[in-house]
Image (cartoon, rainbow, N blue to C red; front, side):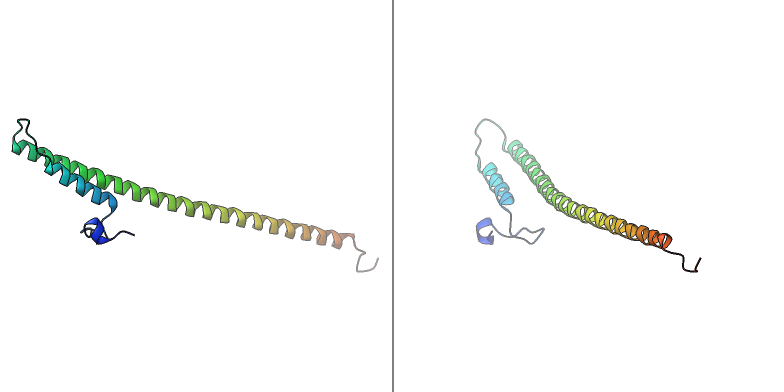
Length: 122
């Protein structure tokens, strides 16, 4: 079970405990900003690049979360559809069997009527 103290708090959007993926993303962002560069780049350029990279990383994680939720939703819908289909097939088979039994009963009844002795005396 996830604990708020272990994962760095609550998600402000959902009010749930932060997910492991979100925690990893936050840790990556901390690591990116903690990196010191001494290869002649300006601090302003690095800050802009870090901001863009952070935005892209957040967008990528949001897309991945949406895909995961869509996959879960799709699998639930597939299971429900499969169950509904099997119930429909079973119901159709039972209905067909009942109609066949009723038809056979009617055929025997009508056959018995016409094969019996006349009732009005001949």
